[in-house]
Image (cartoon, rainbow, N blue to C red; front, side, top):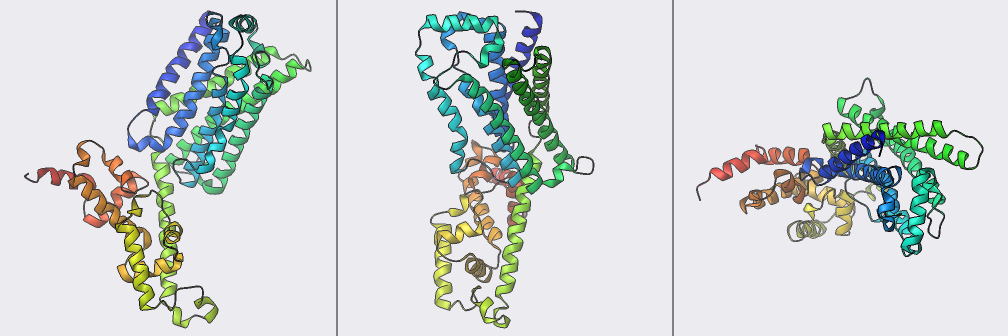
Length: 413
C-alpha cells in the first residue's frame, strides 16, 4: 500500500468512526440531524471499503466479501435527502412512503444473490482482475442486472435527490440562499448544502467521464482521477464541518417548527374571530362556519375533545395538527377550534401545550428525570423541540422545566 492510499484510508477510517459516534450520540438536541450523519456514515464507509479492498488490493485476501458493500451505496442519497426534506418543511422522522426510498438497496441486494453463491475460485479470479485494474469495479462482478447499470443509476438518483432538495429549499426556506444578508444559522445550513452539492456534482462528472472512457469516446483517465479526488475533498470538508459543529442545525430546525406553530395558531385565532361574528355574515358563509352549534352539540363535542385528551392522551403525539385532531373525533376543524376557544379560552396549540406541560410535570414527579434528560421528557410529552417545550412550560408555570426540577428535588421526602 503506497503512502497516498494509506493516507486516504486513514482519513476515511477516522471519518467513518466519527460519523458513527454522532449517530449513536444520545444528545436529544441533535436527533433531527442524525439522518445527515447516517448518510455521511455510508459515504465514508463505502469509500473506505473501496480503498481497502480494491485500491490496496486486500479483496484478494477475502474474495468471498466481493460486492457485499455495493447495495449499501444506495443508502447514501436517501438519507441526505430525507434530512434536507425534514429540515426544510419542519418535520421529523419518517413517513409511511419513505420506505420506497430504500427499494433500490433491497433490489440490488436481491440482484446480487446469484453472485453471492458463486464459488470462491470465481470470486478470487474477479478480485485479482479488479485489484489490477480498479476501473473495472463498475463493469465486472455483476448480479443478474449489470453492475454498470447500478453504477449509473446510483449517480442519477443521487443527483435527482439533490436537485429536488434545492427545489424544496427555494419553496420552503428561500432565506437560506441569502448567504450574505441572512442569519448565521441559515448560512451554516447553506454551507452543508454547498459542500454536499460539491460531492454530488463531482461524482456525477466522474460517472459521465468514466462512461465516456469505457465507450472509447474520450481518453480522460488522468482528468477523471483528479475529479475523483475532488469529490473526496468535498466529503472531507463535510466531515470536518459536522464534527466540529455537531449541533449546527438545531436552531434552524426549531426555528422552522416554531414558525409553523405560530402560523397555525394565527389561523386558529382568525377562525375563532370569524366564528364570534357569525350573525353578521351572509348565509352562505355562515353555513361554512360553526355559527349555530347548539348547546347539546357544544357539550357533545367538548366531551369528545376531553376524551381523546384525557383518556387517549393524543397530545403526546408529536406534531399533531388541528385537522388531524378534528379528524380523530369526526368534527370539522373550525368547530373544534370554536369550541376550544369558547369553552377553554385557548387556541388549539395553547390548549394542547397545557396538557403536555401537565403530563411532563407528572412524569417529573414520578422520577422520570432520574434516568432521562429534559429533552427526552419534552419529546415524550408531545413537543417537537426543546425550544417549544421550554417556552410552553415557562408560559404555563412561570419558570423553566429545569427550574421546576430543581425545586422538586429540594422538596423533603
